[in-house]
Length: 209
Image (cartoon, rainbow, N blue to C red; front, side, top):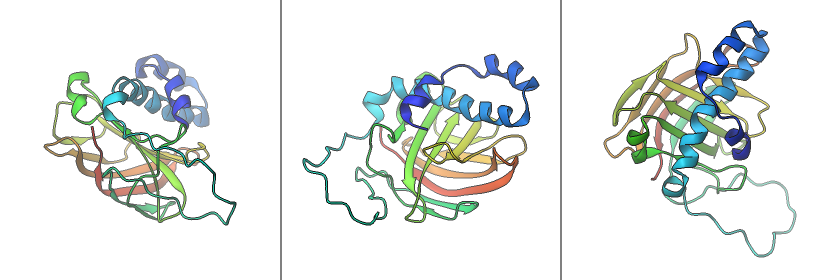
């Protein structure tokens, strides 16, 4: 799930669909997860200079080793009010500081000229483990309400050990407010390992561009 990995996996849905049709179920689901990253990565990379939060400087001297604390939330106004239920329980209230591997980005107000929306948010859920919330919208026409299949939502552990994604009969609704920097999300997601409903995400999101 590192940003570099997502950047390497760029291609269109059309080129993968025939291969997935004949692949085993597990390979099909892995392809679905990769395909969403292919959609999101080029748009976020193209707009990264205008969309990403200012880089945070690392401390000059690393702190002494202690018991692992809860993840520190970053500033910058990227507050969230997202509730996770099912196989992941808790609320995402903010995002962790950017690193080379975990970088939250949002195409936001720049999305209309590209005709696509993409946002990747890394934050702790329930004050514990960090998860990535990835949302893509195609076609994107500006502020408004979008539904599946135009909206695809994915939640994953940054190491890729668990992935949930909207697919098939899953419901997904993504609302973009007038400023294109906040809105709401409601989605049910399938666990790509078990092919069973496993996660629901509801609430308010925000980003800056």
